[in-house]
Image (cartoon, rainbow, N blue to C red):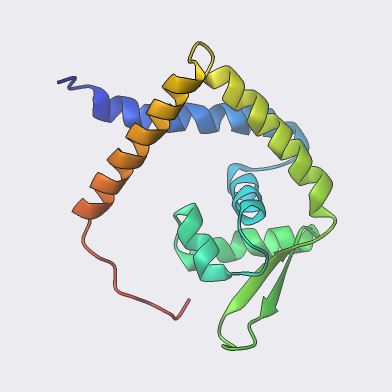
Length: 150
């Protein structure tokens, strides 16, 4: 068994994000901002702030500053939830669409370049294996307390 696989699994995402950071910097986006926008774009509209934080892999309070900055830029809006006043739902604004299209084009181009030399079957196999590794790792973690207070 390859003893370096853990290092490879941790290094590849860092390189992937560094490539995207470098290419998205001319758009004035920090990693936290583009990652937040990209996740929000991929999720159904009106996500609770805590669900967005979970999807990104950060604590809900850590996301607040980024959302404040994105609100100031006019890219997102936070609205109170009808069912729970403590929960804020996050919506992309129309102003975000052109920027998100540029992010998508950049991500697509980088993905193609990063996966160069792999055919479609290999990419599918890689995705399947990574999904399995992620599930195995998740099963090893202690369960988090169920929290509805975000």
